[in-house]
Image 1 (cartoon, helix red, strand yellow):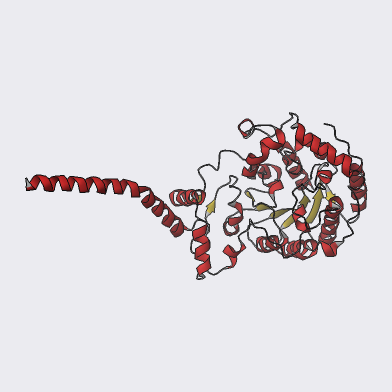
Image 2: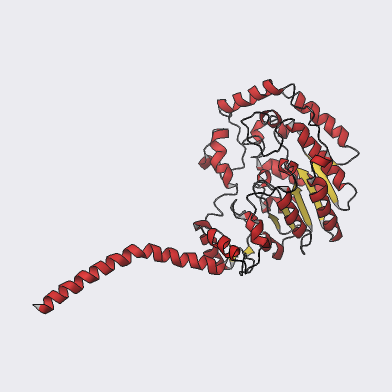
Length: 399
């Protein structure tokens, strides 16, 4: 009888223990994955070596963590810019530049003067790089001390013995980063299980349908040549903006290069340093839809500019200041495509007002940068500006 009671009690304890083990198993697995991530340090932020990279586009929120890896890999061309050029793939770049064998797109969301100065200063001294392309976006109108929330500067400047470095590494744990760490351990190359699903940035997935009326599943693997009419609400918004702001769209902003210091304090020192290292530099202005200069004057429009008036003239001033700042530096060219009417006046070139959606347009821009056929200089800038102003001032929606 006693033996039977002990057996029943043992069985009951075993059953409770088994249930507890099963209940705690997910926490145990998560703990193993978490500490594996900390140990591997996949981005080389504390003790890990900079990871090897593949030639596929990386997830949006990963790109800004890859600076150390970019410096140690044998990339011979790097593109740096914001969301307007994140859709450019290494394959497009390689096809457009004859002397390039391994390019990399290091673009991330809304680069600002402070982080861009830091990045460009390091890239200009990186061996193996032959050419650097800088996409100069509206965000460079911002003050010099402004830094992008998407760029983890402290991850690059803190000592590994600083407790905050460990805290930042611990906070960066998520399933995406854990996936990258495990793939790095398994293959020796930083990659992500869903990295190759498509070549378009993830932010477009969230916004595509609202702007274009096209479902992501019907779009992701194509060339981006969407010609269906935009939703009526979007068309009405654009037409209303043109009607409302026609008389003030090219009003003077009353600023000069002093108010746009990134040209002289970020881009010029970088270009000079790159020239000393024999690196060819191309700065270019991603062309926005012509209707953008009207739409962005709306109080409800999102645009990270310190001044919300005379936006067109602000951006034109930025262009002039960049051209003047880089003038005369060897192996440096500044290109612009704003007067390519077939690009900028066609809203179907974009999925909103600034992000190009057609891969054929990206290829055209890259090929012309390589040929240096759309170069702006201090000599031809006034002609460019006059034509640009007339196009924007006389713009008529065709939708």
